[in-house]
Length: 274
Image (cartoon, rainbow, N blue to C red):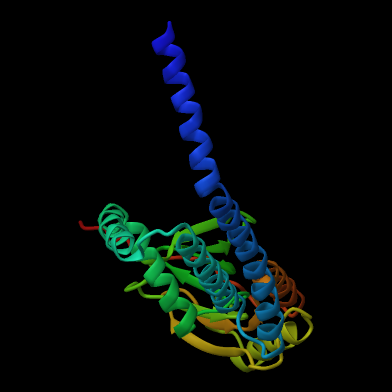
């Protein structure tokens, strides 16, 4: 019983000695780290306002403010460790070994991070532009360090890891798209009249852009029709709606002007043998 009491007393004395010896240093280290968090956030907000004034892209602005925040916090952490008397050289070596193991385990994530940095600095596309890549397309909603989010025309979101986008063929439509409508007319149609009706129909649609000018031309002499390519430009947001409106308006205009849209047909001649 006495031995147990002596052990407890020894443990208490040891704890009190450690608290007296290291308590103030630990408290100061905590205060330093808390100050680092506050100063880092303040510096990031200040830098963000400065970057907004010079019109830096949001992804790059976000990256720079995060780097600044982490850098300021790292400085305060180093100060806290020095206050505790921690030897930094062995600690740095240990962190390097751990970092190498983490890098091997997270190759895909690091690949996306590197690809995200390449996208942010090279600007193959920007927020608000309409792109097609890796078999999907949509309007760029956000560009992050690890992934890019597209807003699909069906109002869903497509999240693509940045590493999937590097090395792929990327189609950047920008903020406008060109429709590809094909109109078929009979061979005895007055083509100048048909082209004029199509042009008039496009001019009457408010979704069709005046610049660049729409392309209206005879494209194919098919088996049972003459095909007219109708390629107006619209804003990305109007692309689907404009296609339906233009198709409907052309059909109604042709009917009102007695322009025939022929059905596919073939003439079959039967030769009777005696």
